[in-house]
Length: 211
Image (tube, rainbow, N blue to C red):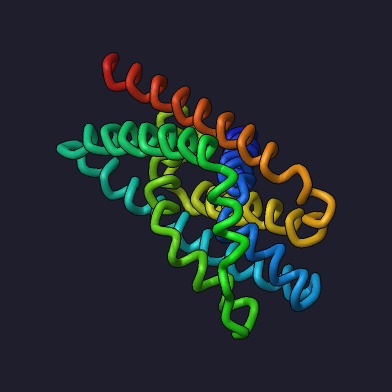
């Protein structure tokens, strides 16, 4: 039971931190809330979170397939290294380019379709989610926090969706209070995420060296 709680909070935190910096999804959650009301903002957020859960589920089974084939187990670690290295650089660059990125995101013009499916569509366009959660799953598996069992997989998927929804909910209800601090907040959170990805990269490299 303890490892399930650790798995939930570790995955929830990873999903939360990955969604915190202003981006296409959370800025549009705020936009929908302003234009169509907070209820529509919540519905949009549910659409995004549902898609994230599906992507996290796919990520688990990609990791599971690789893990169950000893001949490609090293590939799993190399993928994790590549993913964490990419995100470390990505978040660092985003911290440097934060101001321009935020302005561009605010100018995104949304169609007037159902808020839920709008969230599903935008979340589906984010192709970085699956490799991100595949890398996390590989790390959690090596740490002993997750097993390829229904209970653990469900916990991982639900935590990914819950962490994402928590951030979008905050943007939906409190963006008007956060807006003046958005640039500084985004820059700092991106640096934190970059450092976190670097730490995970180092841990993964150490595990590869001592396998």
